Image (cartoon, rainbow, N blue to C red):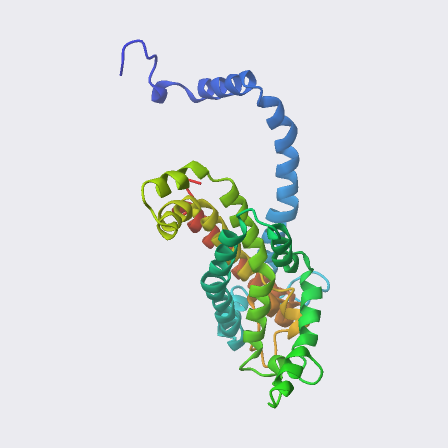
Length: 312
């Protein structure tokens, strides 16, 4: 330790450290903000996050239909029944499929369009709004619109098939194509959101770096690959986080399109919770599904933040 550096931090009593932190916060003007804003935030977080999750965990160990007080204790049987249910495996597989499609099709499409539309040219703003409009549209409205588009009798898909002299498919009524139809809607609706994130990041980049690379002889592709895209890594990581969490929570698009059918082929984890828990008045069973989904989301968020976003 250098001379005159004072007492070693480990030797300072905890009350003194607390007093020093208090004085430091007060000196920096942060104490008033902490006292004013932290208690309401903690109260709201406790009321609307901590307590509902704890309550769901409590209901999950009962066989309860939602009426009266839960008394039929079943322990972890609800969780065992969830993992033994075939529809849960299908729902979990579908969520993984949505994540894969989002990361391999939706995000590259959004990044490509963002690179094209980040430049200033006539019509760029109009094109950005055109691609962003699907995200503005409510999920339920989107599902209802595409339920008519996919209609095998009178929908747009049926008209296109008949134009080419083929028998129109019933995409939402087939176990082979129902999930494909939902994936198309997912990509169409959400890629505009990620595109706008990338455009904002591109417009915030230092143009001098790209110009310096071009002066040094780098081609447009080389400057894009070695300068522009590496500068986008923080935004790309954030976009991946949004895509995965949103995929795990997908519900509003599924219900108006297929309600998880046919034969549970298009269930997601949340639609499975709603269909097999809430609609069948199996609140304890549904609560167990909710706790499992919460655990998956929290585990992913904590792991992703720890390993991929710790420097952002």
